[in-house]
Image 1 (cartoon, rainbow, N blue to C red):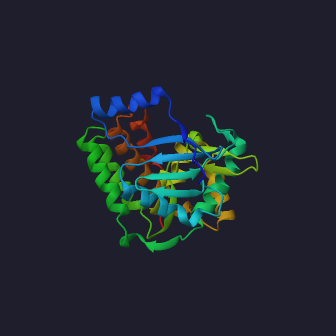
Image 2 (cartoon, one colour; image 1 turned 90 degrees about the horizontal axis):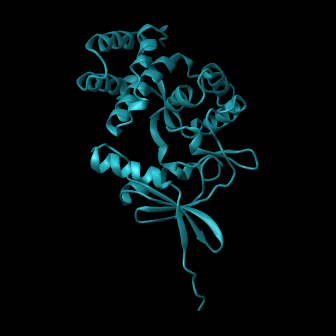
Image 3 (cartoon, one colour; image 1 turned 120 degrees about the horizontal axis):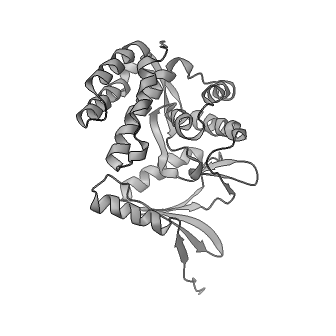
Length: 277
């Protein structure tokens, strides 16, 4: 009988990051995601081991990865055991901030793949997306991040920019440089698989890319998607961006990420040009 060698592993999070998570969760009582990620050696090869809060969360992540297993934009899922996932360990060059402008096309290619899987066009009235924006605005006023006057202006503009139809499908909601690896073959692979979401308002990932990773490249991203994925988000983009910003700001508040909360980001939405379809 062959003897199985002892597994070796190391955390993929720095000691500083782990201490910060514990501090925010148990001292400041913030809403911080429960997760652990480690590199594990099996048979002399590296894999990524992710521990999630429970089996339900792990199974949901695994299920969402299935349509992408042959598309090369996420690590391959090797196994799922209770609340843990074993993934391919993707090697390559880690992206750094600020992202070089030459990577805009690679972001377009990445999102073109994500947005081409099982997307569907639906009437906005058949979704909760508009209601989510209004509820998030209410919350931001309740916790004094927005004034009632700003909320009133944003709701008035929301009435003007709300589209009649939107695209729904998969989206990757944390397209920060640290969450990508550029492989030797030139593929951009997202390694933070928990931020792949299904049944989302398509375009939120682009909105965050413009806000955090590729400011100033909004038009190039939208043009690229129209050309490569046959997906024109322009008519609904003002609504998509406001939907993303309200939810993102609420999450930043709950997580205690003060540096991510910027009330001035809402000013362009108060005064920006309308688009309706």
